[in-house]
Length: 380
Ligand SMILES: [Zn+2]
Image 1 (cartoon, rainbow, N blue to C red):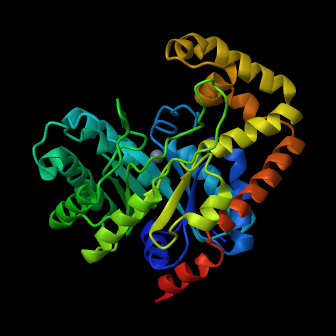
Image 2 (cartoon, rainbow, N blue to C red; image 1 turned 30 degrees about the vertical axis):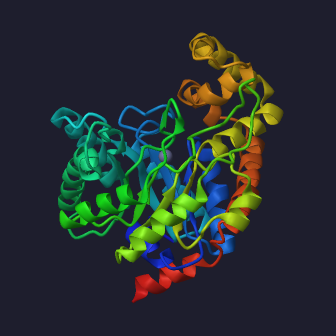
Image 3 (spheres, helix red, strand yellow; image 1 turned 60 degrees about the vertical axis):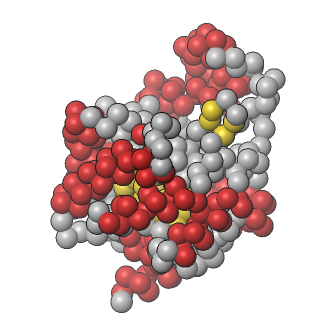
């Protein structure tokens, strides 16, 4: 077993018509990776490992990991565990202004990701939605232009090597004074049709469908479950795309906090092909630290409250639990050396908990056995 990831397109093409969702785990703390891959192996489930630009860039993002070091952690674990059906994905490559300078910087990051062996990419220009536009096409014009520009460049860079492609039409978690702004089917179809006309054929599409990235709290600052994903609208979008003869499926972002029995019983698994689970894995590590490394946990807690408490309270956050839940991610880089040099028994506990939690996700996503479909497609 060499430990290398497979091209993401094979994975997406193979699960497209399965009643299965592939978990994409943002492993901000790489100690969870072996457990996730072992669960994938034992359930014969395809899986994606990913980090967004904010989490992992040439300077280490807020996790302290670069494309090179993250890829190395993933490959090392895949080799050790003996698991082959996984893709290495670049989550949220954001284009927020659309300037040449911004896109050139992003290209330098993508070059490093390609060099590190990434096999799938998410170009996210959803922020460029123009509320002043008169038609849907006008509103999406800048997103379409920038997504096309970036993907064309990516195609050139990848040459003959196939890769997975995710694009984004509505910014995840987008809100106005009336609440969440949910993507309309017409926006999704207009976007994908325009991209196709430009020679860009995404495998999965991220929308704004009521989820939020990260942990959720009520107005007293108490943690709550996420029950806000608009599944009927998600299905409408996916089916509108299908009626157009589109092969593109939905990428569901912000799954942390969604009760898994609801995922198991209510998610439309044919139409959602990829589900991103990020913050969950960080929470898991911190929860293990609470018991196994109480000194380290206390230091991480204190540092976060000291560094971000003031800012968070100004934003109206009501409890320390909420401040830690929202800002604790920024402690990962600060405590990088201590986090990665915890005792072996702590690492083993993280591995075991990550394994069992990944099994629950993969069962809820119904992705057991999906790796066989990927293998079959790859040997065709
Ligand atoms: Zn996301």
